[in-house]
Length: 391
Image 1 (cartoon, rainbow, N blue to C red):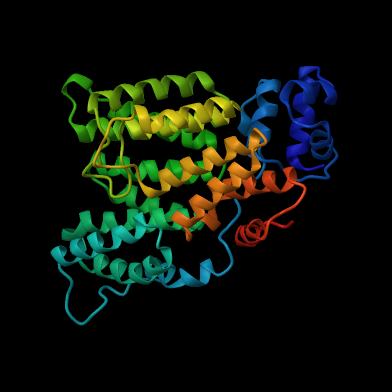
Image 2: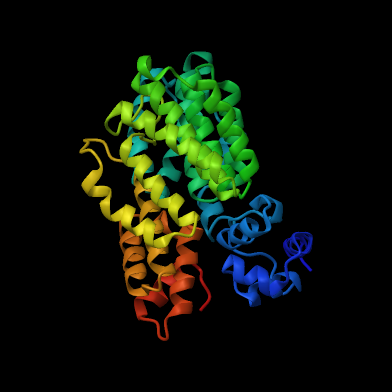
């Protein structure tokens, strides 16, 4: 029996439920529960574990034994090996001319659009030079070095190179002297922890920093509201996944207050990759409805998003919009609308082709489509290959 199976069985016995009663109350098939408890399955989807935890009245993380996501896709470590080498042993400059703070700042500004567009292959070629030049600046280049480290950590997290991403983030937090810049790094760290299934750590980290940065809303600047609001979204995301709906609801309520005070989506000065505002918060409500297993409600919220969100020149980042698309696809799949689910997956893949293969939620949705359909189209088989899904 695996650790997950042992924990499920122990919690079930303590609750006084039979396997059949647990299956009926949670909506998880009795076959899945039996396979877990008998050791025929090593683990289960986070969605499944949360459903079991909700009935068993335990935190989701008490059932988790392994990280919730796989490692990088084949070829990724090789592509990023120059970045890893530069981080371990920077050369102190990428050319014969000494880098300048202004020059590195311009280079970072040039690299950020590649990150936002999920062009990770090109970004992997740029970053070693940026790392070397930023290190060569010494103490006077602290701010630019932090921006480079944040960019590197975000890209490594996107491509599931979690071990190195965490090292980079811890280094950035140690070097930071500005609370707003630190908050941006903390947001990436919380995202990394959640992708690894370390929900307790993510919740503790986000909560601590949200408390630290809580502003007086009537006097807060847009940057202060955004920093606080983004941390609250991480509190909500970690809490709802860890079977703490009350904490999640409170955090989302306060984030909504911050977004309302802003009145529009903004990109704060300390954040290179993220935005915050009413659109971000409303997208999060769709995700939360899905985690609470209310796919019909999630689709209704998604359907009203464009009609109710204030118009803004700033939109949430490409990754936030893509994750929202995956949430919509998941909602369709849970309702048995497999054609619509695959259509939404295809839209997300077309908009972010390098980002898409790294997404475990995309693989989970496609698995639902494959399991629910009698036949598969050639396009579905191609996507399964892209996502490394055995069919």
